[in-house]
Image (tube, rainbow, N blue to C red; front, side, top):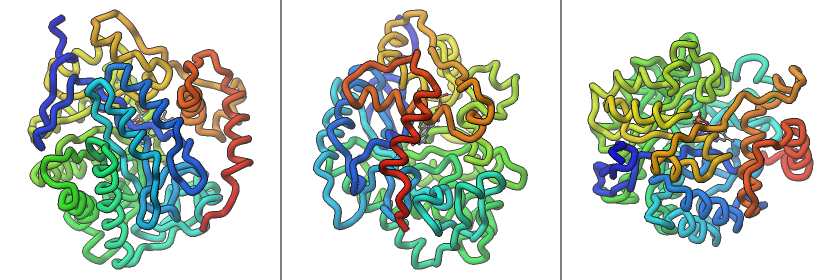
Length: 407
Ligand SMILES: Cc1cc2nc3c(=O)[nH]c(=O)nc-3n(C[C@H](O)[C@H](O)[C@H](O)COP(=O)(O)O)c2cc1C
């Protein structure tokens, strides 16, 4: 088969990915109390490593247990030993697969029941109706900013020592790194806010601190928004300038996504029909940014067919195809694509049949997280699983473990 999908990809650090398919990060939300991993992570990632992708990005792992995105996040921080990290890494490395940990700090996107007072670049709340779910944040002091940068680099070092083959900074979807980049959410007037150069200081410092800890031969990537899709927010032009800067600094892989909780373009919401027709939501952006940098680009969001993936790779717009929801219900999807079978994704729009429920709950996240949990228990994903059932089991899990105030 002559498909580009089966070609190796060499990264600037010298590491090689065995093919052009990457599983994008999907938060497992299945950590144990005290925010450590458990054997279900190894079970899930063994399944995915057998599925054929060259790169597995883990779901977001937090760098501070006082700042969680979800109740059952895994956290890597000082004074905490997580004995399951090694077996998780081992499982993900089977068949020559790379497994990188996505490191994240949610900033203000930490729900009220987890953070009474989350932190952010500036004390600006999320807009309505999200302000009901997320408390108004407190602006970080300079000392706290420096401490968070150190937390990222410490966590990266632990990942390397535990056997993971790389790390990815979560710089997208409205979390802390993305909040610093956004002129709407970052209204500081010190060296961390204002001009684009100042707004990108946080991400560049995080990258440089990680690089210092892990060395030049260890893959370090970032997931970045092509734009926030919000008036006055992080624009396409801002994003391109950040890509250029991070490429110059030696970033190994830049994954392109887009959107925030306020405007969830990463899941296909508010994406123009013309864009949807091109399958990958952020393909136009990738084509433009490709002309600026030679750093490997991974494009995530909307890929569903072999043809769509091959076309995106053939034009050179991206070097790696990112797959999220498809791989959550079809763990063998990469093998089938690599074998050239005319397979398509089974991802379809979801509804509970109750509009008000669909509006209240992040249904896509809940339903697909359920699928990850099934695979973590050694079962098969269940594409017929009732969306209502998924919502109820989510509420049950939250009731048992989620509704305790952490800070
Ligand atoms: C259940 C679920 C959890 C997700 N968690 C994360 C995450 O932790 N980090 C991240 O960068 N993106 C996360 N995403 C977004 C995906 O990585 C991806 O960008 C998105 O699903 C679009 O790709 P797709 O159209 O192939 O699904 C998540 C998506 C889903 C469905």
